[in-house]
Image (cartoon, rainbow over all chains, first blue to last red; front, side, top):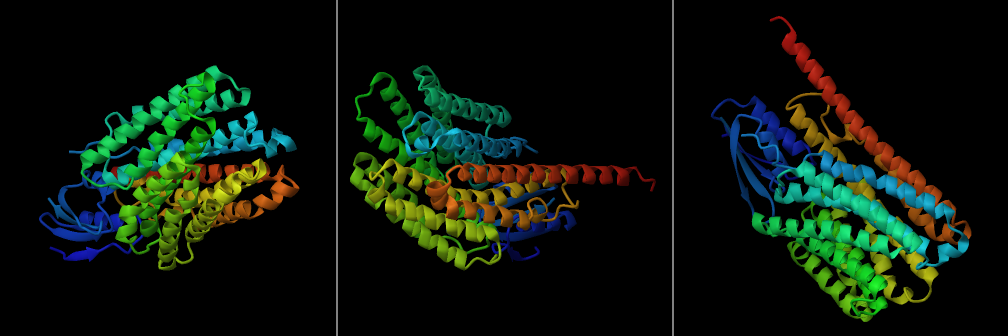
Length: 71
Length: 413
């Protein structure tokens, strides 16, 4: 687990770049959690191209916590 | 497994965005042909035709493109056969706009009826499909409100054509006319701008989230106020209240934005102030004279809506292009930020132009009205150029990245 990173204060596409860069550098079995301003629907399409799976929990304030697992 | 229909293909909203400036340019060219008398009559056939070219051709294309894109980003709405339906919707809008404008210009009932039928079927189908998808997605999307507004606008427009053509249904022309204008401008256009602002302003201008109460209640309140104005002209006096609440919320967010030098910040503020100003003055000026109404409508579009649309496009389009780029070039490559696709200096120049259009509209209307369409043409050309260059930059970057990748994989190890 690489800890939770708060990406809510960053302008697009920086949060997505950070998540994809982490994923490209991660080894199998690693996981990381990201706090995003909202459910990242556009990111899912990019995650599907990579060896990973993920969980996303929507928060009451509209933000979302995304956990990505490198397969 | 990769599902290609998972989100909206970039070419669908882009097609709407790239078509819009052409309708704007056509509107400007037709405005150039009008004489001084026609400029003063809001119900003159050419003026009605040009109004609908602007409302459906220019604003309609941009707002539908934004609606489709923001729906996909916010609620994950997905469509089977998205390219086909996207193209069908685009064709319906362009064909309906052209036929409606021609029908109004020549006052041809057959063209008006055909245009109303095409637009009604296309827009109602889209509204019902989106509402169904929002409901099924389980998210209480703020986008539902402008989509309801889109449906109501289509219904009122069709009724208006029915009354003009057959005198059916038996509703007063002034009442249905007021209903159509209020529903189109408030429950569809402004409601969508507000719904987009709820996402785009905090996201791209790195500002705090909107207050929960505004997020939840503002759009239903706007719809209720608009319906009150539809039922009774005295309701127009309360239309500005929800807009003022939105304006104060927006200005507070813009004040706390971390992107202080971003021209989009000023465009949102300037546009929102002017929209609120027009809505506050509307009940007192709209029945004074045709000239006052045209001035109000022109100020609403050029000083209110246009700056906001400029700010929206300058963020949504490079973001869309970047998403598409990252799908085709999964890592690395030359494109690292959206500024490479839509440089801030472009937005700065577009901002100067759109603010100048808003400031000069009233004096030019009184002194030399033919200058107005020339400035509009300039703006249409500038926005079309920026869109074309953004797409070209993205395509060149994709080709370069793929060529580099092919060269690297062909090198002997």
